[in-house]
Length: 210
Image 1: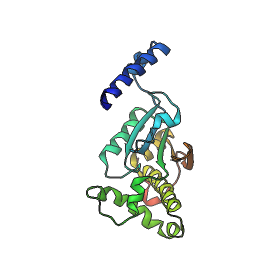
Image 2: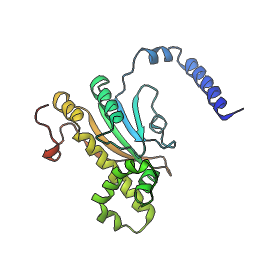
Image 3: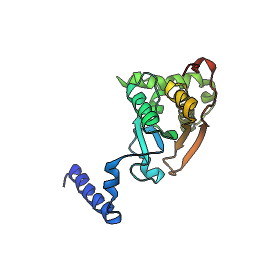
């Protein structure tokens, strides 16, 4: 049996099990989705949002990219964000990185990696801003993991800078922003940052006419 054929077989078994447990499961799934959370995570295959949080399909709206970035020119991310906030009306947005992130590791080097250089430059900017703190750490793994945490914090801040989030804060007092880091070695989520609706950021990023 080929590997992709196994996926199709496992899908049939999963669907059958869902129906056995709840005959109306797919009927509900087909009617609508009302997730409370938007998850912005890393594309790494070892960090599946639903599995590590123990939720069911329909409970988390998910966007993933390399190193869980929130880039102000990324129309894909911004489209997901606007839909999640204005249509799905999510109450929480979680930016979740993970320790040992390959994208963060790559951004700490001077190796040219082709087109991904342009993406990783956003992480290099985070490294530059926090260079003095990071360079004081002797252990390479700990240095990488600290940049993982700092990168998550910067991406949460980037969310707060968007007019999408600021408008929702002003009009609806949501969503609550969270920064988490997942441990590949222990499976535990580490909450490192939280921004309730209306949190003030640097005034140059705050819009006064939303």
